[in-house]
Length: 112
Image (cartoon, rainbow, N blue to C red):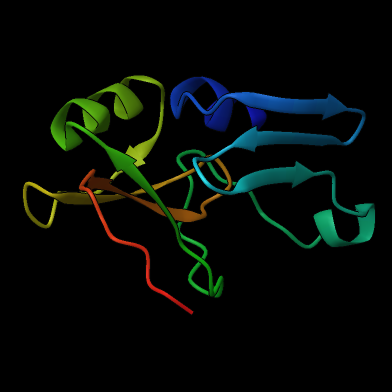
């Protein structure tokens, strides 16, 4: 997972220590940590990965060129779905977590 998010997704490394790695995901910290053995034993990792449909989270990453980013992720071994349009495409990380790449656009922050 660290290689996927660090290399394929090109997120800058913030910290690495035993059982923990974190990346700068542009406004948030993406932290990956080792899970307890008893939980890991209940998880099936397949090749290619199958979607984890029970996961309520979806990470969304911006890309200036969705088509080029999709191609680069496929070349790095990611499972990518057919794009919905020119502005977005879903994929699976090595553990089957669904993520999305979207065309980067300038946004205004919502005020609380």
